[in-house]
Image (cartoon, rainbow, N blue to C red):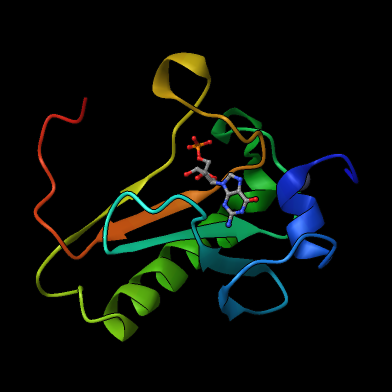
Length: 114
Ligand code: 5GP
Ligand code: ZN
């Protein structure tokens, strides 16, 4: 998916401030942070939305969640609290169609979201 922005970030064709990388996932700072900590965790496998997650992807999705928790600990927001968000399709505000887990924290987060 060479036309996909996040695949291009994975392939280092587009620069990003990387927070974590391993063989299955990449985590990097959001370019327009909405909170003091705003990091995106993405799978290296291209999946457009959560609706494309299949039975073979369960371990990958679990690894994304565990990675997000590890990053929250590293950034000092684990105990204070943080939010994990995956926007899906237009009404939820998805703008990049390569799944990404937003890690948001470092300030009080309101509920319900807008
Ligand atoms: P969505 O709106 O799809 O849930 O989230 C997409 C996120 O990607 C947005 O928060 C946006 O700021 C971020 N984003 C878009 N383009 C880039 C980019 O080129 N680099 C980085 N680091 N983040 C990006
Ligand atoms: Zn992609």
